[in-house]
Length: 146
Ligand code: HEC
Image (tube, rainbow, N blue to C red; front, side, top):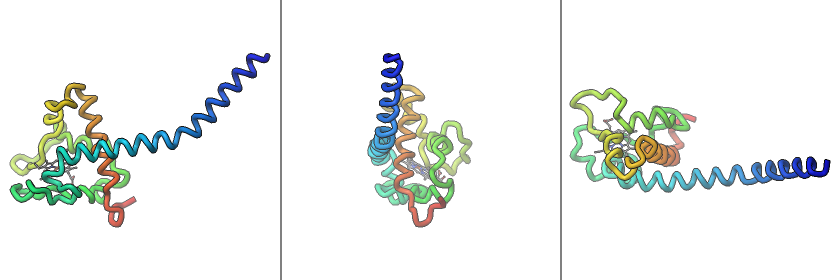
């Protein structure tokens, strides 16, 4: 009887701990992903899309098609950004792209030959999901649909 009470006591304590820790832990996790995503963005995307994501990077001038304003993705895709769909767009390996009109690198291939590729598809989707978490955080809230 006593041990049963102790058992329920432990479960109760665990539930309390979970409900207290749950939110801050995941918020901290999300914040960490935004920071990591920003680093990937600066390394892989800012040359064209600009450090602020609006499409004014130094390489943009030499492109036939201007890089998209990534702070307006919410207008096109809705908020929060649909992670799986955008990962596919950025990855580029599974999307049909118009011939001769495409200037955006196929990131799935690039990332495959980067250190992230050492962890295979998991490594690639990990990098893409962090970048998209970051993109979510820089959406122009004045225009993005909610
Ligand atoms: C070499 C220049 C270049 C680099 C580097 C680049 N992009 Fe792009 N990106 C473009 C151009 C140009 C377009 C618009 C035309 C197109 O879709 O091909 C575009 C389009 C996009 C779109 C589609 C927007 C829409 O309206 O659907 C997304 C999302 C995107 N880029 C994200 C990224 C991310 C994330 C990175 C970094 C991993 C990146 N880009 C790196 C040139 C680049």
